[in-house]
Length: 556
Image (cartoon, rainbow, N blue to C red):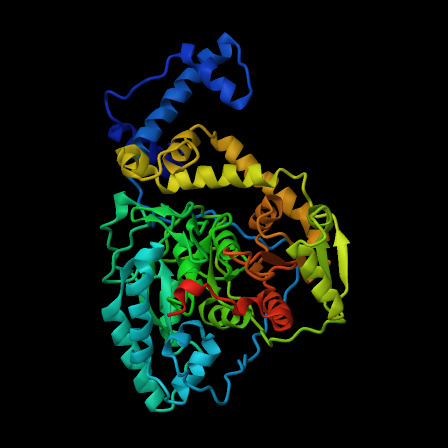
């Protein structure tokens, strides 16, 4: 008797396992229903072809029913991970020491309320000079969260016990002359999709509002190592969409009649209102950029994979990113320096150098702007004001046509829909999606249901088309260190979500009447160029100081 190869024995064994575990009364699809499904994929088969297909389709159906029995939780990873690095890309792999400038002498303000808008560097100086303790500073910001959190609807839970433990540890280190990082003793907030032991991780939606995950997210661990102090889990749009959660709509600190936009809503609102010195957000498509733009924050969306996502809610495996939302670019650099890096669990993550110096040579840096998005704007637009400011400072800014005909928005939304529907399959299947606050057509309950009809073949081909888009965009983007675009322009945002390029969004003008300041986005033309784009943003902020404006209603 011929010996059966090991891999065939495995397949035969698996087939037998499937067969004996399938439900005996599994639903079957008749050949007469196949034409309806054909319309979804743009094909038409003959009656004979349908008769040939029907047995395989019903076998597939049994496999699907078998898979449904697992109710895979959101934390189960996807073993096919996305890599934004193209074969022709080359990077430095050497990490140099980073020396952030902590002011030698910072005075405590006569009005302690002014601490709310001190930079991380200023607060760090006060802590190191023993003019305030981390316990005192943490109490100060916790009290502000208690005072204004309901006004902005930006706080899901306070983490006072964790905060006091970490603040005391920071004070003990200061007393011994130990300085771990500029973040040591600095309070901060986490978007409430990151697991922290002993806290609820609600994802901003009723079906998960009592969820506790016995795990510490990678980004939380990185901040704990840096000595930062977690004081709150901040609001997020339900399952990372928009600014509405089970506690209401997160408000814009410049105008309470407006929402703060984007799912990192609480992180942006709380930072701009001076309720936390900085916060952590996430982005799949616009969730760092949009609330930073709308609220007047400085938000850094890093290169895809620059910060391991372990312990964070999955929305789309091939697009989710983690980044800091701060009040200025140097603060963003300080936070990113502490959180960036890979771990063994997020296989898409990669530790790359962040060689931040805070300086860029205006004569040498290659800067472009998207003329097809900016040239048609009024002469007094904030975007054209940015170009003038930079040119007056000696920066050469080259006009380019930013790709706008690649259907990047459609590609990204298709990938996002399919992956998010898989990530939350048990929610849809259980019917608990009916408990979510947002039930209109463009929100997740309907998106998850509709995405069930994206064929696997089409999803894979969209991913392959994404690769072609990456190849097509690379020659243009990589010519420049910085590409300037309007913050809320869909195609530049979508394209760089597909390619994985980093960007930083920041205020670009004075506040408009009672509203927030306008914003601008600087895209890094190369992957892993966070050091360049944060230094360039720092240059712009040093010329303009727009980031130093704060909403008056939160001054006390």
